[in-house]
Image (cartoon, rainbow over all chains, first blue to last red; front, side):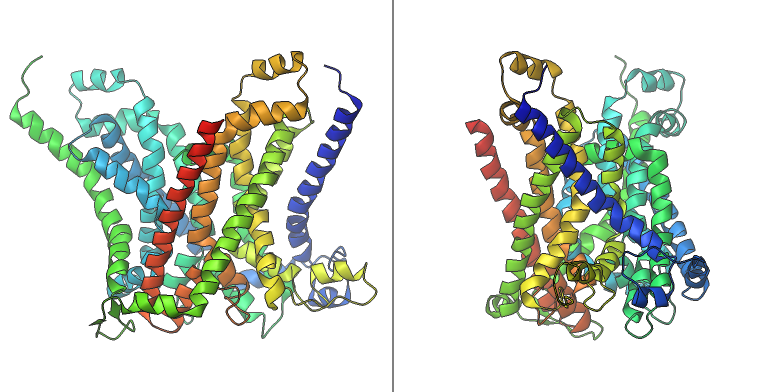
Length: 283
Length: 302
């Protein structure tokens, strides 16, 4: 098909606009990385878009890691994200399997309740949740955060996995039950391995959400003496301290520290993440 | 079919219970109970830690009607809803069409890169954009604008009422687009190529194809996107507000969620804060119901 003059002009304009938007997306991120390698003098003396001077201030990373305790926050984030994701994936897979393959009286109501919970504003439950956890000693406690993040991730997991288990062929379980395997045994030995693609999608989406979560983290881990923070909470606290001690380089190094694992994950699981978006948004 | 013995039925009931109960307990304790409890507290006067909760009926809700800041907050919530829907949808649709229907090169790479802002924590976005808006010499935006203006620009973007909400809108749109772009791209790629070929033979221009093939066939996903933006904005935009302006200056950027947080966790009026929470829930449900209605009618007309 030959393009008319106006159409090829339009194509060029479209290309230009796509490039402009791409620059608007990439540049702030690239600039964060460059800024993490500057010292304070360069922030105040040079233009914000100036490249970092040599030698690059890699020490900003070590500084934020030890001085601002980001090493500890990093480990907290890793532990909480991993444990909460494992909890949510296991529990939502078990429930989804029953709802999809062994419907019982009330199972569709149960499904409806879980799925509609995705629409409920979190902030409505924030105050009672805080006092509930505080009453049983689970504030400023990693276990509390794990339970909260795990529970929060259940609806999405159930939603995606019910659809997934419904799509698997029925013959697998029938063969297994003839072999005398119990329902639970069939699930763990046959269905769970079979549903790996669905489980991975759910797990990745949970990891992204939990790793980045801020508001529950700041409410539940609220003790400034204990400082049991996750990375997002740690960054917000550090930003608050910038009023008294301005250390821009280390602050941006902190941002980079929190972004790197996510970008690695994205590079590895890009397909599952795009799949997770299309799976989750069809509600 | 053989009759199933009762031991078999018992075993199956045990299996179903064992597989669903732990999930249900965790969900009830952490998600359902606090939500219902929140609605309950909204009828009380309660300062939090102290044990005394006094029932005051609808007083907290009456107070909502008289509170000027609530008016501002609702206005700001819908300001964000409206502009986010318009801008995110326009830009995401444009990018989705550009990356699927315009024969551009390396579209895969663009798709990957343009999703980046959606992967970043709201905290990182808040810190990054606060730095961009920093009013002193080190702020990016003012330094950039100073290149064109004669005098150095000293605008306090987040600190004055006429620019603050727009300054918050920018990162909210910036960080939201990639998700909907991916969603719409998937929808466009599902449209059979033959539709476009037939239209091309009939001499339909690209604009015509976009209007009469692409838009009607991705309308369902656009509708999902609109409702998704509305819900996530009403339920979650308080976090970026909280990180960037804390509702200031003078409560002018307060949204319902940030105001709830301030009333509850900083002023210890848990009952009134919970009434604001109930208001958020009601407005979210009503708005998405109305939108569902409106958008459905539009589909039928086409």
